[in-house]
Length: 224
View 1: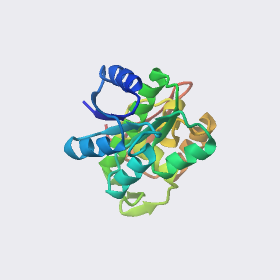
View 2 (view 1 turned 90 degrees about the vertical axis):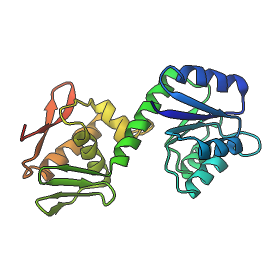
View 3 (view 1 turned 90 degrees about the horizontal axis):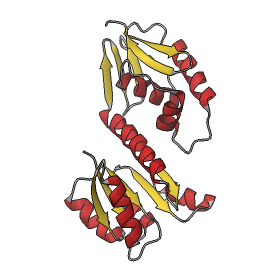
């Protein structure tokens, strides 16, 4: 079970968020960034939900401190600050997502799941399949020792599909998990990238990218 650290100075908001998340996750709570840093050092944390406007240490400073310490734990900001400038400040701290209060908790749960999936896949680093290797540290795809050039999004998309062979992904799922929930890109973006990947991997005999009309996409292993 993943552990989520909730950093929120408003007692009612912190209690409500914890109550919702405890149905699916282990939770830790802190009233400001300073308390959160103390907890973070003592407990394993898989994801952080943080307000921005807090006493003693605000969410931005907390996020910057985590990143300066070398932590890449996912961070989702939940805040009343909603201007484009505010959001840019949040993402400049390497936040993974940004939600404006009042929070819709169904949406929050969806975003948490998407961010955790992306984080776990990126942590896997390397996928080896037959004579094909995807290395996420170098962003390289090699087959029989030959490197196939991919853009970052092409690589992320292929890495996601290959992480779950035979699992069907809808275009919207792939948009959320590869481009991010807040991305303005549409379903045609996924279609174009899938087409490019097919062209670039057509000589690879370890897997095939399959389209299911009206449903989505999956990877089929050719050796199975």
